[in-house]
Image (cartoon, rainbow, N blue to C red; front, side, top):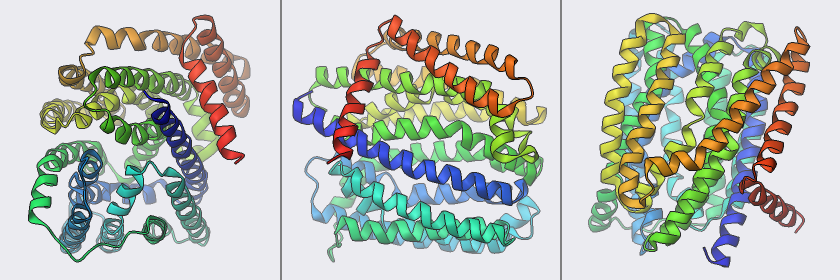
Length: 484
């Protein structure tokens, strides 16, 4: 990678990290405060609707964001065409959701869901107005502006949510928080992107972008349905309280993996798209970011799995205790998330959304089979089914990615296995350390985390993991960037 691209990548990662960690950090804290003020059942009601909102969002985007980023010769006509399509499809899906609200309420046997659905569904239209603006900032690797937008929206909407939850608004505090966050995001993205659509819609542009994006649409649809299917079937089979416990454990387990991998990949994707014709550079880039993602995620997920009980009790109080066991299981499932995402991403970089779609269809057939086999055995067994599915996911996606990047199963295992073994050693050390603080939840959480991180860093130094040097470089760049 050239020096200019390295600088662009490091700077992009820094500001992407600032956005994710500041925004998600603030959101994490605000969510914990709100969770202490409302009931698990309130969270469960919102989680029941996630599948419908998420499916609508997939159709609104329709893969056009990635298509715009991947296309080298994009024009203003392309951007405007996507913008008007997004508006049209978001209105269509909101109307579908609006008129389906009574049926959704009847399906879950929750009368209050009808009105909640119609209000929270407005988020589809609001967010659809800013997809192109965010894509333009991503193409320019401008995560500094995105950081300002997201931070402001999360902070203001979070404060609104806390005030309403404190005043006893319950589930409506969550609805209003979500809508205000989307509204502020959209408004600020328009201001910072400084882009106004032209009065033009090109059928030719639409077909070119859709030929790539349509396969991502179908892939994203399958993935979104699967990821939200658990809340749907748990809500139908069990109760809104069980959905609340599962959803809270799921969000905690996903927090480090999705955010950290997201920081890296949202920067690397446009940069790798620029080098898509240079196979050797792209291969080196792929290996480096695979290792770096696993280097960060593996120890965090194992430490979180070991410390799930004190984490839940201290942050959410004992009314959320059943979520602790679910969190431990899901941490082992989502620690493999970086492997899947990095392999998925390389297919899009090389323009092989057809491979992406084939892999997604095969994976979701297996996933849904596992879901319905485990459904009758309780929520914990459902979570173990997710662990099993993630191993199938990796096997399948690597099969397709090695066709375009030429990094075999054995090579990927060789690159990440040392990091996995060191992480297991770290988890064992953390578990032993908690035995000395039996009953002291704060001691278990703080001392266990510190000991785990120290053991992991020391082991990486001893075994000379190259990622240590790269982390030091990023920290130096971060210091320079923040002191400008």
